[in-house]
Length: 292
Image (cartoon, one colour):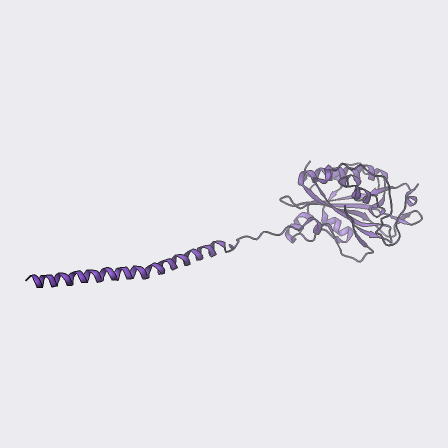
């Protein structure tokens, strides 16, 4: 009896040992499988968390100030584009005045300390005829800055550039010293308030035009200025139109839409703007939407 009982106990123990061994082998096999699954899950999570998300709305790119400064001419015209440090000018050697002058004015630039110059000189980059001091002498017209010296106080070089004759037009004294000057001062206020603005200005010539001096410098009938504040929301824009005569009325009197200036000048302003923004901005002539 003892020998049979002993044999049965041995078989039972052997069966338990086989079960334990099977469990151990199963665990050994499962460990790398589970670890592999863990690594796969981790990699999957990282890849999908770093994957770009699809936006439900698209934000339109904002053109840079330099992109916005250059208008597109819609008709052929004589011009030489000159990019100075302080401004860009489209110079017309036939008229001896600019077609337009453009520049960006920033809040920081309005704080410049450079003293105003008074030395009107030829633009060294102009190819062809250009006005001189003698042309303006006793003409009854001021040498009217398009890019004003007071906007160029941030550098000695740009102050000097502002006195190039390529930046001048014959202007009625009571326009140059009153309405035009008042608008220049208001624009500096807007640059401070809005951080930066874009200005494009110039003459409007009706042919045949009056001329002054030996070089036959064309005298504009009117002047325009268009202004864009591109870095505020919503973007703002406005135009101003002056006859070349005394201008003493409030600035709001001279405010017009940029669209109307485009029709007079045959130029397309601020074309890099998205169409929906450009159309809205250029149709607006509300002077009172601007900082006071």
